[in-house]
Length: 199
Image (cartoon, rainbow, N blue to C red):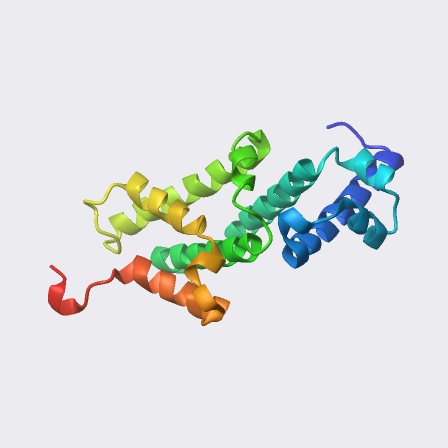
């Protein structure tokens, strides 16, 4: 493993600091209104220094999302492995909803087009989906999830729900984030039908 120099370490710390502040700006202003001049001013650096670290607004947003994915992967690894598989799966889905809805407050729908082209983001997304697939298969073996539903369909459905826009789901902001997540998790887990209409 290559040893990094003090200067390289300082540059990494600076870049992490910029990414953390950019995340706060995304949540506060949204992607469209996020201004690189304001971000540089809030960071206490010049715009030239900001662009030396990250070449564009898109690269900055990608860096924020990749960091978010890395943290999500770490959180997955920290879930208590002694929990029943279905509980682990619910925790992952709940965390995914929460992360997505927080991010959707700041990121416009135009962003995913360049996300799909970023290999690092795609790599972390695939790792997450692979982990979820394994848990679904394990839950099927334990009788918690219906075996006749293909795992890929379940994973695709979870991914679709993760891509929901919080503003579109929570029209008029009548629910708290936790209420919204609990309702979505309930629908996902138990469906829409009352017991009398279920098979």
